[in-house]
Image (cartoon, rainbow over all chains, first blue to last red; front, side):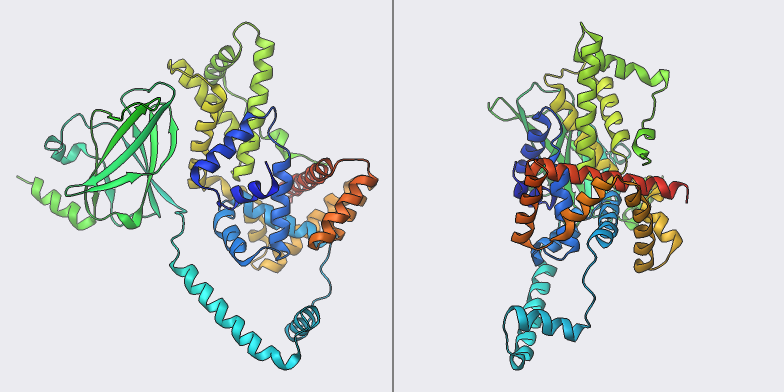
Length: 266
Length: 197
């Protein structure tokens, strides 16, 4: 367990399976590893001292600073560093530019202006790139689905189907799927989703606990309509079989809901 | 130095004790003392996990995880590896915690925001509390923290830390852990101070 791997975990640079493996390694040790705390502290200090690369700084702000407790840690570290290692007297921006660039990199002053323009252009390009990179969801709307005893045709009895209001008031739907029974150890699950017309592919499973499998659907992938989840399982690497039953849910805009109420009137 | 963590443990009411009792029996049916030891190890690991995940109250979350595990045992769920099973529950609780914003009103951040409306004054306030806590440390600990943080640049810092560890006749990793624990103590002290501010 290296410093680099711990940092990568905190910044969400590991794949979900690597992150899961990392957590299992931590738990497998006799005690919770004390080194995690010191590496996390170093990471926070590096962020405060602006020592992180541009990319890691962004990851720190987007992926690490996602809870109040962590924001507090940064505030406390900032106040601690102020106390024990105060920064050198602040130079005004022009002095700072001159001191850091011209002396450290030996750039002649006459070259400063083109270099600055170049940097601004690069920063602009990076910012545009950042804008278009999809980001991990930060907020979740929970949805609990138990098995629909009926087939799709009977599933059209709308009262029985869980509903979600569209547009979703979060970055993603966090769906807990309750299975009819607990599977034996060594079972691997796959959850597939579909709308009324098409199969939409497999969903990433982010948690399995007892009879509940949890998946996430980004809000941007949902429109008004009915969806169905199908759960497949493979025991000890054996052939994949579908867990009996369907998991329907409706995504409805307020106008859809009004129309449905209208349809239900005699 | 005040430590707010010791007061965080929510003692279970008799009605809630049952899942934990069943968990203890599950951990080591023949020897309640050994079961208690295993329980504490699991609790500490879970607290470490939740702290690392940045949840608001790691101690309470660890307690909640163990209680849910106890309930599953009562329901007759087959649990081949209790540590892994608890990790699964803990992951779920950590996710739930991200959606739970209610408890955050008691946070240090909220406290600072209530006192001042700009970042600089908030930082000034927290630094003044940090100084009070820092001054309460033993002289050796103050010297260690001062020395450890003096050199901040890349390679020079690594070399500085190596020399410091050598001088203290400690390994580098032990030195880092010692500093992290001292800083954790300071953080806890500041949090305790705001309760009586």
